[in-house]
Image (cartoon, rainbow, N blue to C red):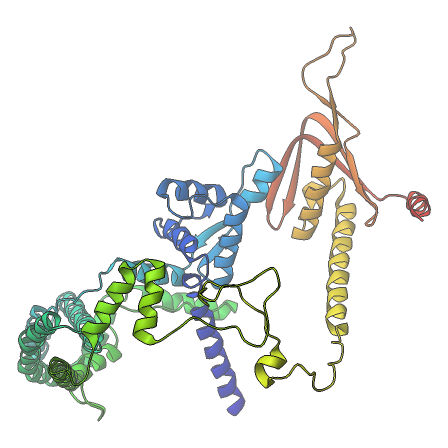
Length: 546
């Protein structure tokens, strides 16, 4: 039991860590480029985009990411995939060159978590830092909707399922909007009241805001909260039966999810999780009731609203006392400091030094103990802020002595790091050797096998080298005239370390298809032949090198 609980806790922590990683792109040094890329994906629905498509959309929108090249953009996309904001998508690629195929074979699409985070981030960036008006009229609609629903549920025959579904959806949308506006308004209010630099004009405006607007809000909530609680008490015994009746009438994704989960359990696949709309779960009704009534002994949201209003009035009173003491000269010198800051802002550099000396008694620094270099004679009137820096030894700065103490530290042992580097190099060499063996075994039967990513990468590397080494020439007909088209002479490349050679021949009408885990590559008019280089040639090469 303990082991299973510990395992579930670790899984929950890992899931939380994975979801939090999706926020990393908002604080990365390249966050403006990441946000621009995410906006491109959020502007589409169920679309997978390749690097050229994303580059074109970024150039159309402009901004800091418009100048990204294909390689840099690929790095940004792979980083977003690693954080969980994007997903890789499989798609058929049509390319006219190897470089275009390498850039276009990876396509990306938006993940659900990435879309939600980017939507919230755009909302934060678009909203102004101002007070949000509380949707007070929605509270009256919530009260009326609950009373009407309670009357229909308690009547003989109950409420019609479709009518009840529409009323519940409307009710929870209105309540959610009202609760969000309350939270935003009081968050702004707390931000303002925490300031201790309010002048008389600002204080007067916030005082009117508190005494008039906040009082109207709290009075309206205090008036309607008992009525809403009474309607919920009447409705509460009928809610389970009402939800069951609504589920039997319109299951939505829940019914399809039950069939999919039964099939997934039979096939051993993970279950499909469904997030239901507000009001279709009993927990939603518990949250609604807890907002207006004290159901858990910790107070309702109405009580918290009343306490928050009281704290806001206390903060306003504290600001009033501070301003009164400031007016009598007992506490703050805010005006004097603002006047001094204005003098600093308007003064020339030399005059600013004189003002600092007169205001704070900060005179020019004197370099004592260590003379500067002979070619850096510093006049006495030079400020320490702009003067050259003299390096002071650590021993003299901390102990006042140049003498060395203690024994010299031992040479750091890097054997573990070297072993890790050797092991990494060995694994890379083994992977390339395995890819070479796979290519040799697949030669002359590429249409029958599917290459791995490593084998396709090695083949593209050899093919690019072979085409770069190829000698192009026009073929000559039997009558001595040059015909149209080109022939490939000496189109081959090899890797002596892997003992593999690739030969490319041009044959008109030939279509060579390479199937791989990363996609399919079609080569027109080209035949590929892969063989092993002889050991004798390798031995001669090694002898010549030695």
